[in-house]
Image (cartoon, rainbow, N blue to C red; front, side, top):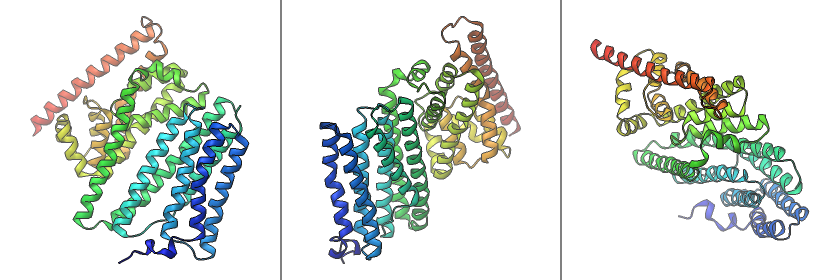
Length: 410
């Protein structure tokens, strides 16, 4: 039986023709911007493309030409145009590569979610308000950067950060939307298996991408290099450092101490400590929430890969705060510990408080070492280093004694 979204009358429509025109305009945008350097003409073509995007939706709704093909073709035309604009600007703005990577991750996930929804529910969903907001902001930012060639670097970075933030918001909102649909629809065991496999593939690809990027740029992951490549504007630098904490929460390759120390190089000590605390909240929350949603399967995977989790598994009692604090004493990657505690459903408020208390000394000692890195013989560097070593030794001893006591009570 022919599905409704493949019928001829749902393909040969005016809105779909306008979407096709937008795709055909892409080579002209590239030619005008890259070859002719005709920035004003580039903006005119982009504006024409945007105009067709607006009127095709109005025509589709007014004349009852809404079709499933249009629901697919319209966003495809949009995404190809948006990707073209971002790629064109990478030659002028190095930070645009990070925006391109975020955009690519979002669209790959959207493609996967859309495919799974179509396969399981036989429906295609229209764009939501947050998707439309992301599109409008990206077009506006790209057009400003194309037209105003002499825009200050700080202004360009601020616009790119705004665009990246809106894209990330859209990704999170779409993730919640599709998760609700698929979770409700996947009642059969085969569908659940398909979703679990797809989720593992996506997470695996994200991890591989992060690890590859970190490996290729491993020489740039020192505190001094991070500080050197961070924007000169203090507000922008703070936002970038918090974004790096979010990245660290998804990859065990980056050591959190490097970010703590980099803040000490970039900012005065009180500001550095404050940013480290906020960054720690981000760093322990993201993997916790991932673990909470993956559930028991994540517990089994973590326990199989990291034998030390057997020890913390046996320590869990009713006191989630103490448990969270003790877990930070185990020499486990912070992200792994956070994934585990989210998967076993430790109460978030107690988990966050215990994690912050357990990591608090690092948020203070590392920035002090960072701010005095130029003179490692200085009293500040030596004292903070000794304090860090002492904390590690004390927490290791406390953890060992607690384990022994716990075994004796059993």
